Length: 310
Image 1 (cartoon, rainbow, N blue to C red):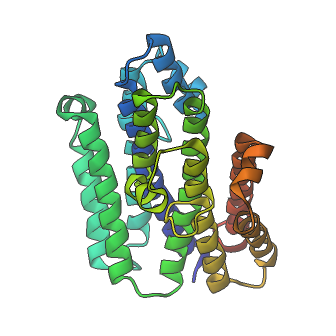
Image 2 (image 1 turned 180 degrees about the horizontal axis):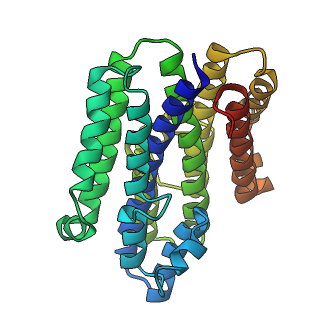
Image 3 (image 1 turned 30 degrees about the horizontal axis):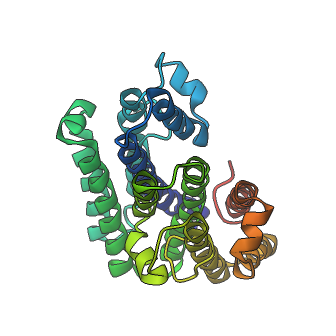
């Protein structure tokens, strides 16, 4: 496969997954903002979202105050913000258009229709209908694109690069969501409010019902961390993402990719043989930061070995 084609497919998948995960992060933060708390505490949570995406300086250039309305506008519909949902879905569509001949007709139509529908909505319209409804729409459109991709694409290198991009982005974003929310929630007061917050975190990664099925009792920080990090059978867990990345790299391996495959294997082994008690004892934040650093290095390796040189 031409490296330029692989590059467009890989980034199309990453931007689509990034938009979905950003919708999940914003949705759980918005739901948590409805829980009784001080204005200062609420705004601190929104400031954490900006910090998580390294957007504090960019946000400060546009807005004087960090609050729910300003952050939502900036992260949902600002075309100048490179990490907004608007920008991510636009970039996904641009990358899909560049390799339109490689995609099936149904896949192109799904990506293109998503962008057309998004650009017809202003933030005021989104806000008036309810931001949670919009976030559900983003998650649904991402699921549609993913379903059409797996249901219609030939199982060749094109699909492998799409899956690789999606898995890399998903693992990184799951770690980011867990790191931010775990830091906030582990210091919460036990009770109905705390239960609601933990439930909102699980719902943000479609894991609430899965948690109930696996653990069957009270929601605890350690078990949430175990589910989202180490459970191989949880689709959005770090372990499941790392396993998929290793498999995809094996399928597309070339003469230059041995070191990237090794790094992916090391990351997978660290998750496969880890125990949650050891992770928590050594520090969850440190563990997740190390995971994100390794994912970043993997992305660099994939770009170097397979994609268009920067």
